[in-house]
Every structure is written in structure tokens, then in C-alpha cells.
Image (cartoon, rainbow, N blue to C red; front, side):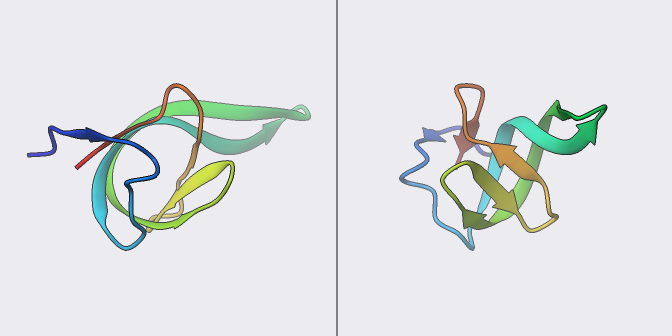
Length: 69
């Protein structure tokens, strides 16, 4: 279904994509906690550092982020 990988610049807020990458999960002992996730969700916002989904997940923009349309 979602087979074509697209760049971050091609991704449009309000559209559903398959996202694979690291998400910010808060802090533990003063250090940021991240986990690797794979979900299909609508992107609500793209900032300089994160891709934010409708569910509230904040994918970190780094080399591990892959977006499929």
C-alpha cells in the first residue's frame, strides 16, 4: 500500500503516510528517551526538528526517519 519513499520536503501536513523512525518519549534521569516506531498516521505539523502526527507522536527528523506514500 505505502511503497514509495518520499522526502521530508514532499510530505504535506494533513495527509496520511507510513512513518518509520525515532520518536521522542520524554525524559528519564534528565536524559531524552527515544524509541523506534512504525505507524501509519496523518501528519499534522512539521517543525525544524520533528514530524508531528495526529496521535501526538513526535518523530525526530534524523537519518532514521523514513516516510512512505
